[in-house]
Length: 601
Image 1 (cartoon, helix red, strand yellow):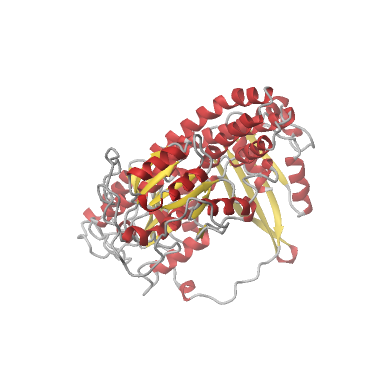
Image 2 (image 1 turned 90 degrees about the horizontal axis):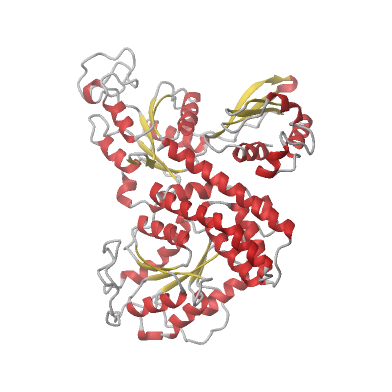
């Protein structure tokens, strides 16, 4: 039910936000509790004279919305039937042009109390103060609501500048009403709280978002630490890319939590940090692996994937060069001693498998890099093909930062013995023009997992030395079972893209939208010519970038079109209609989410 209502809200909301709220709505006989769920949006709204049609099977508010937004008209009818079976009801409030709120109630029986209890459960959070910094108003409201339920007082700030203003204001709302005027910096107030600059009350804890309109959470944390009275305040960072932080940046915080943060996890961290004798640090995510900066070559023909990969590598502290095809990758390896190569399997001129065979065929004439395959297909056959070509590992697309970090961590032992990189491993992000360096001679070292040159001929098919774990559902490619069942927008992938920064996000989204705008014409032309190879090529190109921005349903349907083209057939008219409708849905969803972020920025 929630999936259906949230999906509808996102589909019909071009600007603003979609919010899900859950609250108790009374009790029923037998100790059962009635819980109300509300899904609110700021979308197109529903005219009052069309409300009666909402819950009828195969009915739409307006027939034109079916052509624009898609849908069968069954979702709400099925949702009402399910809610009724569960002892509840469903209703809607709406205003055209302002948005809608769908609410439904469901009965639940009493829950079993968890076994055992932590000593932290005796800690009282009542009256404790928290500074909350996030540029999204819904995130702030949700955080403040969570803290309020725990008895805490939260003060929201939408930027680093606002947060510093609150922290240094003489009459800060964080100060209790009975605070004496003129208290000295660092002194204690009657309630035990510290006094900061110019008498401003110092909070007990601060929760900071990583990316803010005027900077980032790390820079803000360092500024707060310089303020009087803030030395002992636990700072908690909320981020989607915690693994890419340096050890120095991570050390500023008492805890680093990966978004979206579960209420229970946040409560556990806050309790732990504020309990008497509690830990100085509470981490729910592993720290980034320490190690030297690597010199990485990325061979990828898709400009969107190039931008995202380059941003991920630079955020992780690595130096990166970019080439657009397999032959250019071989030439680059001839000239430069790279620690690792991220090799897209499907590229023009020369694909990634042939390029890797060519690199391995160079044998000892060049330094043999650690080659990581980038592919959207992770079947056992693909794994064997990667291994046979001489690849060391593979990552499934879209590549996530934590997976990339974990795989590159295995390259560190190779780079640790190397001192001959042009410009050094810590050279500037923009490398000098490629030169012809001498063939690197590695000094002898103790026995270990040193890379042995591979023959040019294909070895016996074995699994790659490093195989990145992937979900079973990905084996047939994204959405291969039924492309339409995937979400229009994978919000986790969208969040990962946002954590690369607004500049990277905007470049990626603009390029993707431009590719989408030209896709229908070129794809239909390939179908009209019954050119199966062209169909597969067009679908493949847009599939990769669509998965990168989180357009999961579109990516799945493009995968099916690519498979059909590779099998020598072209999609039927009905299949093309479904694909193009998904394209419209995806572009609308991505545009809406980007617009919502831009408004806040």
